[in-house]
Amino acid sequence: MDLDPTGGLDLLCGQSVLTGLRWADLPAEESAFRPGRLVGALPAWHAMPVLTGDVRGGPLPCATAVLEAMRAEHDVVLVDLPRGAPPPPGAGVLILTGLDLRSAVAAESIASRLRGTAPAAVVAADAEAAAAADAAAGVPVWLVARQVGEDVLAEDLELITGCPVLGQVPTDRVLAKRLALGEDPVRSRSALRRAAGALARELLPRLADAAAPETRTTNQLANQSVSRPTSQSVNQSGDQSRRQSWSR
Image (cartoon, rainbow, N blue to C red; front, side):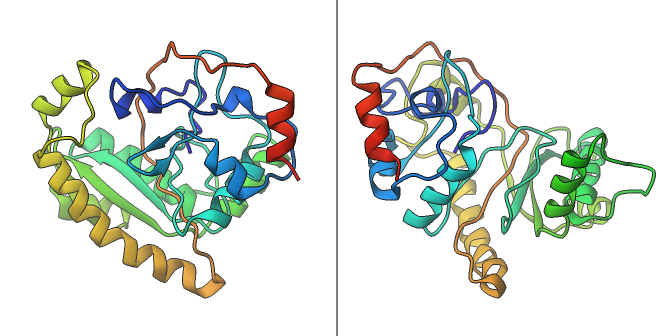
């Protein structure tokens, strides 16, 4: 699930952007969806359903209901959060950060807020924001370090943030060129792909452990994402009838 207001996650999947629903195709005020029908109507990338926005807009008020439907269908749900947004209840959070002092300080600020250990002088602007902050407090937080800057060691990053570093991902210029050409980023081997595989093997057991106390099987990965606009829109024909089939 892409919760960045500008969307664009589908552009990272390669030139063959898959057809299916985007946020703008969903009924904004829907309170419940039929999990199987909703997931089956989403674009699939390597058998994984993807929900993102396009030029018509990003996440809607029905995002919570969509997440519940996704959780009913999958053991793990990956949610791309914009910076500063609170994670959903029961989520584990993965912060993508750089190995430089500025990034380390930013990661420390985010991690402190998520763990409920931010300084007392930092207060929420309104009651709704305060409630969201309280709900997010105490969630498990992990880091993955991009090998950018490299004036801070991974061990230093752990000391600054108080969070374990689960892995490091290299800067892959070949992959960047492949994405610029609209190619599927996982069609060929790369250092970044190997690092991502190692990270997944390290992360998944921790997600299971974090979910066990509350018997939750759905978890969230949050990173500092770079938004990319997309020019693709989804056919609107038959919109009303399709909406009725997704909702309860």
